[in-house]
Image 1 (cartoon, helix red, strand yellow):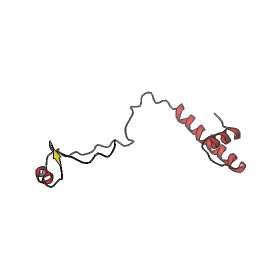
Image 2 (cartoon, rainbow, N blue to C red):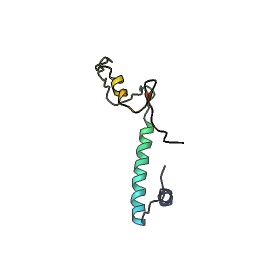
Image 3 (spheres, one colour):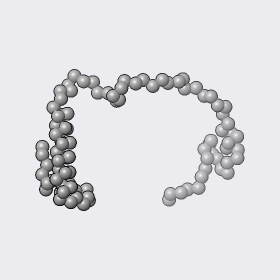
Image 4 (cartoon, rainbow, N blue to C red):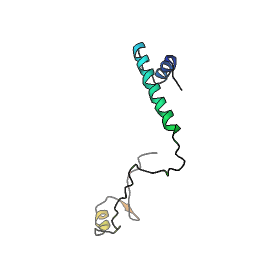
Length: 95
């Protein structure tokens, strides 16, 4: 696929960019280079490749999920203006 200067002008207009005639030629060459690189990438056979979430196979060390602090919920809610069923009551913001 190859873009023309008219295509670049149209893309610039849709993107609300002001591009001069000299910039149009340069931008066309850059965009055509990008599109040719994409065509090269699409030509590679990836049928036997397993998709990965990250380029490097990294495993995150996980710690056991254990409570490390004492439950101070009652103390915190004792100083709150209003609570109900363990929840803080706040003024309604959105009607």
